[in-house]
Length: 388
Image (cartoon, rainbow, N blue to C red; front, side):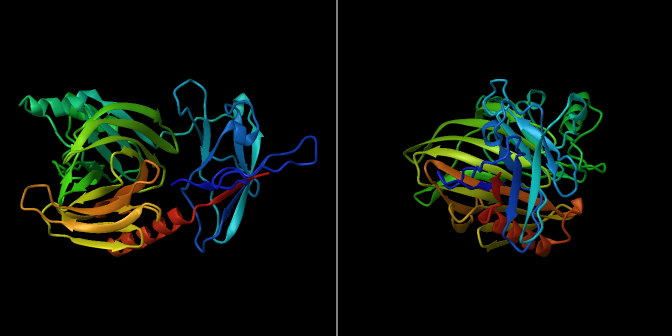
């Protein structure tokens, strides 16, 4: 989830203060106004914010412990120059944490383990798949769509979001696809790491969007273009573009940047949309044998799943979250629970995620819903960052 940053110029920009000393130290102060500790939330900084020429040798040191933080550099526009330095602070309840900006020598620059990963997967038609240490997701591309339209077996026509159920913290995408390709295994069976047994079909899966028009829900087809932005120890993000689609006579233009950070069960969808003032992010109801619930800024569907249980959810800030609806249909995969979300200045930001009981991450749905309350609270009360 993104961090709000202060400014005198714009509400979410950085507040810069000059130091009287000639050789001043740049200190980042991260403030938490909530009664809970904050972890696994991202601070995003630019070279301009830190008053450095480039970010390649910049390190972030915890002033209290003296330890260097895990950081990741992000090239947002693929021009070969790093645009952001990101890190995840640890801030106790109702307190602040201070970090010093330091220059690293070549020996001090450490490569950290890959945790947040995503890629285009041509060997399985043309999926795009992403994961972190908690969860994994998948969406479908234009080749899979064309196969269905041309009556070629093996295709998938859906803009729903599939999920892979993980039981391990290390990356599995490459391993599972390689086993699929060389015939040494199948990700549809759980051998201790998890599996893919979550049916999507034409449903919204976990977080796919729709537009409600004349009491029916209209969907796009598969994504048509993609671009990986970053992978690393803290974050993976990528861009998807969809061909313009028809919502009962209204043409919808859609693209999105999808982000997944370390330690999070939720992936962030920043959707750019034209043609409508509201979209609906959905959760498939499968056999309709589960329970839909809602809280402040969140929608949840808890259901039995094979020999286990799963909870799937949508969360959005009060700026976007409007209302919820359970849509029941006799047609296969068309029954979904929807969170209706406002389009603000051509964008909608929401989070979709899940908890699988066998992963051991949450004891039960009660614990998961408590987590939803906490995530919603944090989204609506971002950490404040000041640079001195």
